[in-house]
Every structure is written in structure tokens, then in C-alpha cells.
Length: 303
Length: 253
Image (cartoon, rainbow over all chains, first blue to last red; front, side):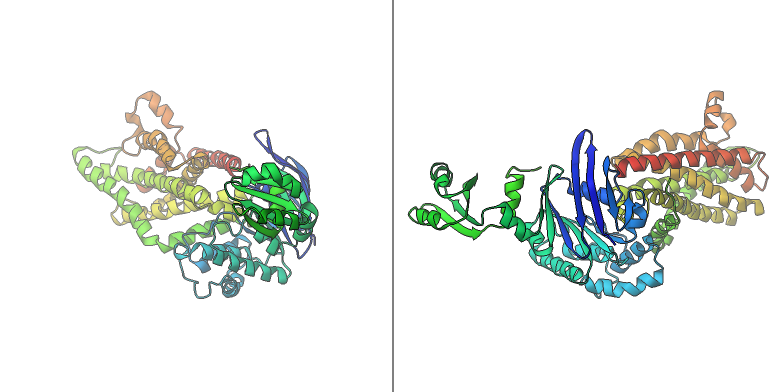
């Protein structure tokens, strides 16, 4: 079974190309991330993959079914966690799972047999009868995840699963997703949290303006796309210093507000130079995925 | 069109919500028509000679059943369906499962018609207890109110599919539902209207529902059956196809 193949996907809205020729393939059992700033085309790509939007061109195969032609059949073996919670506010936790299972054609008996383990997985054991309105944001997110598992899907698609959650809630979601990966589920997730992607994804693609800029394992991308060391220089004088002197020590230097980000292969000469300038605060750290992301997609705001 | 039996899963979702508040829902839907029936039926009816060959309140009974069925279906297809479509995003959640948008719209259509039938049947029962339903013919009003529910559910879903917010529904009620209530023979015989309005009234679905319900409740056979039924069915079919197209434009773009 091939979880998902996307070939040369194009989609335009009102003359603006939102997805401009995307190709990627998920391997069975991996967690694959689509990263990109707001408006990069992540959600549109997911909608096309689920058959909820017809692409202008391109070919999609979802769990071995061609999409959109046989999207409904494919969705029977896919679980979806949407970007915004859309749990049924009229129902309790258990009823949400029961009603959702019916959409998959499951019998009430089969769904009821799964409800305890799904709630247990979501950390909501004992909350069968609790109204959705009484749940915290993190609990709702976990219940949405449990709902996506009601049909025991082969592929799980998550659109920004931890946006808006506090650190505790995010860590709990990550822990559950890792458990699912360990159990052999294939996961496709979109996010703009780099730590999330680094923790969960075996491979990821960084998207911008409807295109995939790079694809690979997080560590491999950090190694191949960017200098290994970062020295952040901040303070009132940092921009002036960066303009005058950074080029001597750093391969690349980006200024954002009062901080200069210096990307270097060897940080020692730069740190020595900065030690003599106590008015500039410094932070020396290894390069991470966020640096790769910002290098590829730029520092401009996306609204 | 991509319809499947999964539409019933959508129907069952709505039924499960309704079941939790079934009694208040039915009683709530009963209050309004009963106030009209007794207020106008006795209050105004006391001043009137026979209307349409019967007492005014007996005349009004059939119109009340049809008008409240129309209202129940319209409210469900407008406010309630719109909440699920736009506010709660329930439709989007369902469409991530192997259920098509067409199934969702069909499930909503059947549910709104069912709910209208449930409240229509409650009104019918009260009328029968009060002696305004004569004989077994009156039972034919049940399938008629289901068909009436379908018509107004389908029309309402068209409006929901294009509505930007709840406020939009005021136009539909003010410009369509209210004039129809007054022009369809609910409160007075159509013959009282100027000729041009009588012709226009024939285009209104409520006219045809009332035309069938009134003789049935009075224990008579309606002079014509199939032209009315065919027209109601045709409007349902056209409005349903329209609602599908409009919902697709809104949600599958």
C-alpha cells in the first residue's frame, strides 16, 4: 500500500497560483511534514489530497485510490485532524466518537467497542459523558485526534495539530503522535513549528509560495542547507556593527530589528572579536531547522 | 450527483441532537400555531359567517398545519443547518469522513423534513383531539406535511448555502415566507384575492399544500391531487439540485 503520492499538483484561486507544481511521496510508516509560512499552500494541498478541492492539474493517489475520482473510498482509510477543531458541540465525548464512526459506515457495536481505548489514548478516560463545552483546548485537540482514529486509518493527516496549545498540551500531543508512529501509522502533518517538525518528522518539505523549496530529513537539511554555527548578536549597536564588520567573520549575516544573525562554519574568530565589545550581547548556538526555514522563506511577515 | 446511504448517518446525527430536547422542541413548535388558531379562529372567527363552507376555525386548521410545517422546515434548514455549515463547521468535519457533500445536503434535507413532520404531526394530533380532523382521510395529511417539509427544507438549504450570516435569513422570511403565508389560502380563501394575485399564488408551494390539506382535514377528497403533488415534488427536486450546486460552490472550491 502506498499512503500518498502527489505529482505536479497545481491549483489557482482567482488567477493566483496557490499550489504551483508540488510533488512528494509518503513512505509507509513515516511521519512526513509540510512546513511553510501562512499562505504557502499547505492547507490547499491537503484539501486536494482529500478530494475536497479539485486540482487544476496533477495526479494524486491516496491509499492506492486515485483522487478526486475515488476520494470517498480513499477517505474511508484516512483519519483527519483539521486545523480548527470542529467537534460536535451538541454531543458528549463518547457521542462525538459514536456519531463520527457512523460516517464511516461502522456499526454502533463496533464503535462502542473502540470508544474506551480511544478515550484512554486521548487521555480522556472517564470523560465519556463530558460535554465538549467543558473541555480545555488541549482536551479538544486530543479528542479530535481520537476521532480521527475511530476508523483505525492507515494514514493520518494533521493540519497544524498543536497551533494554539500551551506547551504542556503540545508535549502530550507529540507524545501521542510518536506512539502512533511507533505503532506503524503513516502521518502527514503540516506545521510552522520547527521544533514540532524536528521532533516528529522523519522527512519534511519546506514550502513557500506554492512550491516545495527543499525536501529531506531535518538533520540532513540543517547540514546541507546552512552553515553549522549561529552567533546571534543583539543590542542597540548590533545593526551598525553588522553592517561594518560582520562580513569579515561570517559567511552570511541577517539583521532583524536589533539582532544580527551571523551564520558561520567556525565561530571562534567571531566570538573572540565580540568578547572585546561588551556593549553587544551574544548567543552562540548550533544552526537549527528554523534557521533553514528562515533562510529559504525569508524574514518578511506573511499575513 | 454523489449520493449514498451515508446521508442517513447525517440524518441520525441530527436526530440524536433533537432526541435530547424532543419534548421542549415539540411543545415549542406547538405554541405558535395554537395561538394563531385559537386567537384568530375564535376571536376573529366569532365575527365571521361560514368561511369556505365551514366554521372559520375549522377552515384555519388546515392552513395552520401547513404554515407551521413550512416554518419548522424553514427554521431547521436555515438557522440550524447554517449553524452546522458555517458556525460549527460540522459539515466540514463530516466531509473528512467517507461522506460526500451531496450526502450531507441530502441528510439535512431529510432531517429538516422529518423534524417538520414531527411538529406537524403533533399539531395534527391536537387538532384531531379538538375535533378539527374528520375521519381517516386526515391521515393523508401526514405524507402531505412530509412533502411540504421537503419543499421548504430544499428551498431553505439554497438560502443557507449562500448566506454570509444569520441576518441574511431575515430577507428570506420577510420577502418570501411571510408574503407566501398571506397569499396561499392559509387565513382566507384564495378567491378573495385580486385575479392577478390568484394566478401568482399558484406559483407558491404553500398554496398547493393548503389546497390538499383543507379538504383532507374536513373529511373530503381533494378535487385534484396529482397536479399539486407533482408541483411540490418538482419544486423540491429543483431546489435540492440548486442547494447541491450552491453548497459545492461554497465548500468544495
